[in-house]
Length: 184
Image (cartoon, rainbow, N blue to C red; front, side, top):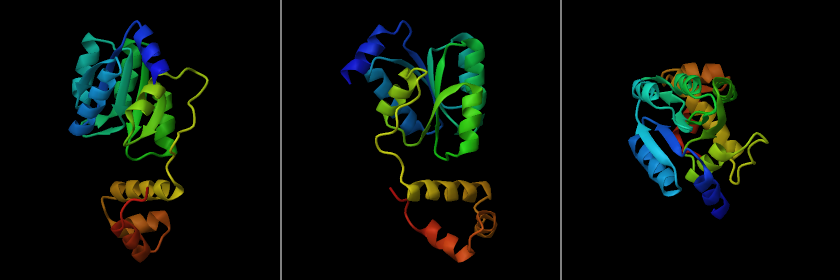
């Protein structure tokens, strides 16, 4: 942790935009970043973030992918239009390859699943072009499967039959999976 604190202390600009519609997560992440030496600005929606970016261009950003008022990708694009050297990390509760590719194309330097540890977020923000280190505690295959099923279920409007059809799964099997807790 000392090397990260030293790296942060040497940064010429420590401003970071934290955009998430989950207030407890946003506040907790903002406090964690502040305790590590960053200067966070917390916003809850796309419109608020875009308004902030018209007056300020932070060096870093931590942006939620799916928000009530739109999509975090537009904020990452606006951030890079305002400040091309800014580094953004995308957070999501529903990770998939297509959205990770879209985030990177928009200019995000990394893509982390929620709930993200503050240390992982800081490492992603400070990582250089040599690529991110592998996660210390990656999601299990069962957790990845569960996340995918939950995302498809949500996209299908919580319709079990439609979700089962799209996942090529028996409806009763899907109901049993949905009734269980998320695996670790």
